[in-house]
Image (cartoon, rainbow, N blue to C red; front, side):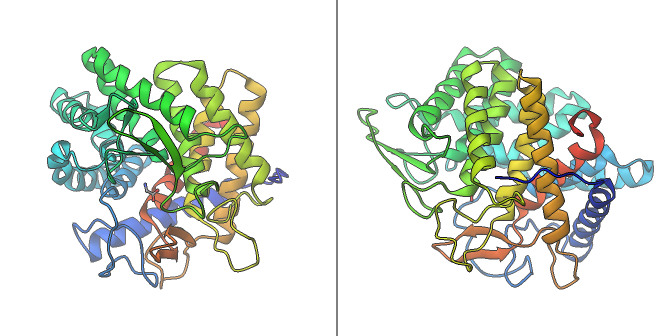
Length: 377
Ligand code: GLY
């Protein structure tokens, strides 16, 4: 259970935010136009495999956040220029039908760009990306298939349906809206368990739509709760509820958040899987904690129960505090922002390393904590 005893932590968050800006700036200066994924021995550049291609939006996504928050106009202008420079090359991915991850790529970049410009050409990119993502829909089982195969649905599809909701509302498409909703309901029914824990993957018979079993790639076991998967669910269901207002989705986000809170160590940072034996050498996953913090801020904003919202905001701040105090990559050997993330335990990729999505959601949560007084206890 997470310990909520509070202290004055605003200065911690400001220092971490400045470190994050400095790390992103030096990456732009030292390795221009490189899109990092996970570090190896503290360095972003290495020859290890990506496993799948879902991460190119996170670096420019941080630049868009910095551009929107920097009080110094010339510095904000520099961040905007970099954000555009790193966002434009991603446009061809709007036709990439091989992954279920287009929400990760486009909502961090073109959506943030569209938010501040309202430019219809930028919105057209988002709508095309949504239509491409929708082409992965399996009408039998009613879900968007993961990059693995048509029989597979991943929990992190919840982070991608936001792209469909956005496009559906922009072009008044009942088809896109239906695909987004049906996918949310399938994840809720097949991957979220009665206690609020989640499975990473569901396997279907694509011909009949019959659900066959829960499974995992990055979790400890098929019936365990992979920590990052749970965080994707907290964030993703809160986000989907914000778009469509369907009460089932906020109840699911709440169940997942409560599982996180009740099963996490008191400092708010979980081991890489909630069911892995805690014999002292199992690594934590700080990216799961950063995503949970940002997702809990979102849930705090959208949940109708104000008391629970206040609790979720406090938990998010506690998680951020621990990340700032114990997991910042403050020494210069590390090129990332947060240490102690985990990408893929079984494939031995990015273990106890920085991961770009951990850095992105950490920055997003810090930005929320620093700008929105309403989430402060
Ligand atoms: N979306 C894949 C992961 O969370 O590692």
